Length: 404
Image 1 (cartoon, one colour):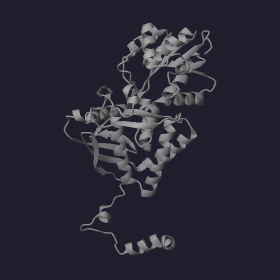
Image 2 (image 1 turned 90 degrees about the vertical axis):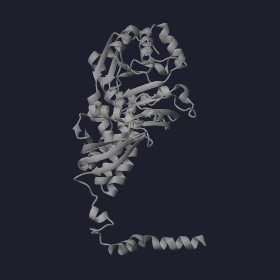
Image 3 (image 1 turned 120 degrees about the vertical axis):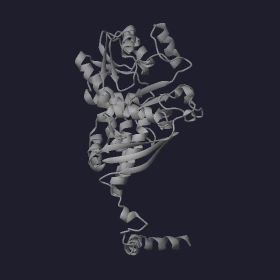
Image 4 (image 1 turned 180 degrees about the vertical axis):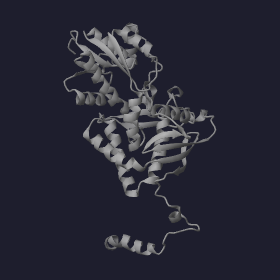
């Protein structure tokens, strides 16, 4: 890396190990570092983190509360899409990156910086998400990624560097996990979990209670949706952030919402990831069930196929693209009748749908029932079977002859 010569860089700063030593490392190379912290629900003492950044050499620390924007403009669209990467990951970290990167560029413009920086590794997905978004908003900004260039070859070496420069960090050589948190979920990786045969240690459980320690008795709850967006739990109205936080705490007590998976990263390698998203798992289960009640079968199947595309797009950092906007337009059109309530039972490690209702329900009891009151015309079935099988009768005869 060339000497910074006083060049101003805005660093996406979390206060963790990587970004904390990024500050010092950049300052040592002649950069003026302004730290930008995005509050997407990760918690933490921002005064302490600000002090840490300034102590490491930053000239300023700027904090934006993005929780509401994140929930309303990123989480809810993903929920409406039923997006799960590789059918397991609710995309918590993935969804937070575009909103953080968007504001990173805005802060760079505001303070007159010519560069932005991040603490992502060369092996990870976040470098893709941050850098694609930055380039979409301002391709002229220089992007600096110290972790891809510096001399440290391990987390242990980074910890030693932090100690040398008296930068306090929250990881140790014994507890060396990388943790990223927001209101929608948490990712935990690294340490002994890099061996996919090793079970996640007890100290990796953060918002979800281990199954063997669940003491809460089974509980029934109801969630009300309006056009695909959850608005009430047990008839009590909540704003977006409050609803996610409430459900997260509730479901977490039941051991709901934890995933241990082998994941296909954007850069082509496999990684072992552990995720916690208790609110996400409950809301996705409820939302999908309400869609089954109100969407016709063909539309439902098409939407299920596009959910895979949507999740892939988010995972790869392609949020601010015409494709995502087009998918959202389609998805929003499907959500006009996704209004109603879903009843669920929470128990040890399980969330089960036990009831659903909507004024737009396509379910008709008088057609589905096998009891008295059946209005279904059974005589139509014979003709239906004949017409449905007609195209395949010739093909079946050909296959049978071929088999001989």
